[in-house]
Length: 231
Image 1 (cartoon, one colour):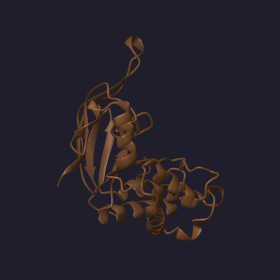
Image 2: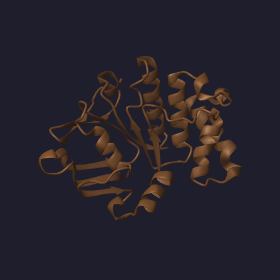
Image 3: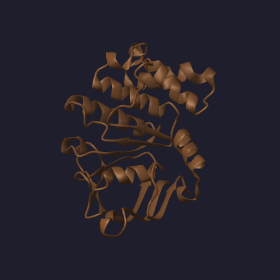
């Protein structure tokens, strides 16, 4: 299968001299399309840093990252922003919804940023809310929703632009176990239907048991683990 993310010899450090901290050293990784992949590791292991590098939110100290075969290191900030807006969806632990907008307005806001034709908005909003099972809640505001429902809206917003890649940083960390399982079920269905490739971070061993492709970050490097028994 085709690789959607290729990482070649990536290093990431912060600070200089005696204050220099090395987080990632010589990371080499290839992720194929239509996979659900998780980065695991203790706090400070660099999993969120690696996710941010893939999402063009930060720059590696050395090495190259390719998204869809294109080196993001050659892009200027405007081009990186366009890449994020048009080809990537982001799901954060804190949901990131606009509090004074309804569910459908939050999704429409994301579509507006990517300059999706307004005539397509309603059909797209219905499509993605049906996927996460929240179309009946489309007129509600975030504060009227549970944490799990807010996270499902965040997922709907992320997939509304038909991204090639979804990046999710600890998307189940603030949720109870049952709701966390529902989020992973949605991710797996998106991958199965070939609507997205998803890279997420997690430290929850039960959630990680549900994911086939898991990479552990330790000692500034990365180790691959394949789960044979997916629940």
